[in-house]
Image (cartoon, rainbow over all chains, first blue to last red; front, side):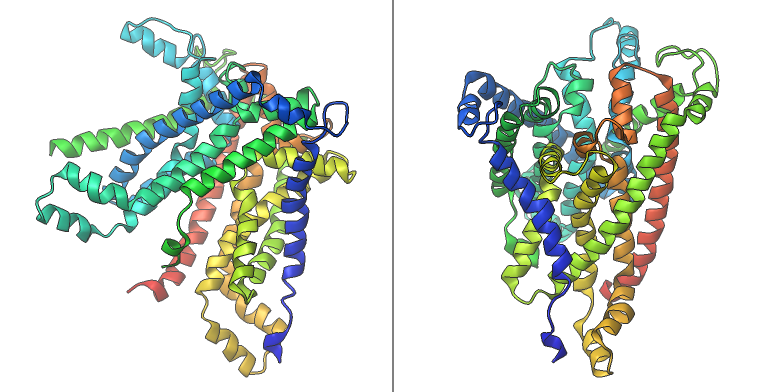
Length: 268
Length: 266
């Protein structure tokens, strides 16, 4: 019978999974057990639990949290208002377009805008605040990160809001709930899945940013990603870099489990 | 009426902030002064400089070749992957394959880059064109799978059975029934892979050697040295190119959604 013939498509695909998904992860874990001299040891793991690395991990989490928080704060109202516009798909497309522009170029633009004589400082001077050092500060780092992640947060929230059955809102209003109560008890809980996947899309990359920390934060902010890059490409201590990567993978899995959607909801 | 105005104002500000940096860059690419602060006069010198810079042109060519090759190969692999998941009979196999598929999508670029760097050095692939190409193929495959799979799932199985009943071979079913049906998904996947490859910085940065560079890596190297208006000119050109891709993608998806919707619309 033809129906029983084998699933040949599996061969290239499983080969790809084995080579580029499983092997690299196994290799990262394997390398994390070698110290800088190439001996097998748990030294890297001991090092990770010293104050230097713990502090770095904490600050990395703190920045990622800040970035996610502000992105959500700005993205939710944007997504909400977008669903109310005419031609909302077109507006949504216009929101997404900047995310297709090369990341490096956007970061580079902010070097100019936030520079000592840049547009942001001119604006401050006109406002009477006077020039300030903006580039290479925490503010510029968080601002640019929020700028970059904004479309990725808006998209899932927009989709969740768009799928929301409007009769729920009418029902809530008919039953005498105020606008705020309708939002906090009906709209927000029903779009929580979108918020969660948005946070997941932002938080994990925010933990591992390394290009922005160098260009915008001027090496002041060290995230887990920066540390990995530093160990792999600058100090050539692959073992330690791999160890940090292992922890980053663990954090990532934990975050995904925490924000993961229940499978049942997705099946419809 | 008043509330409506506030909400439009908010959206206008968001749109302005989103687009301002891009137009700021493009605006200063015509500046005859050497910085992004004082606009002295209109010039096209920076564009001329780009087109006279052979090294940069080679890098642009590299980037395009890597993008086209990697998205073509990953489209083939991705379609095979989507078919493999689609034809998997047991639910558990399906779910396992899907989760493994998504690993590279959710992994941060740094992890993908670092692990590929270890992998390529271990099996002895010289860092350069081949390693970058392989890395780009690897991270584009899951995207293609995700773009093609919904098209497959939406296809009615009775078409396949009808083809088989009418005496079509398995190959016929694939080339004459399944592939034509999922073509829009394949195109969307190819476009997505293309943009991912063109945009990628982090993974390429890890697996590129000394001799080989793509645009993103080159821009990073230039930007670390400070402001140079040839980057602005380059970004203006890239912006135009991206816009062309977006318009192309928009028309492809628009065409498909018209076809697709006929069945879905109530």
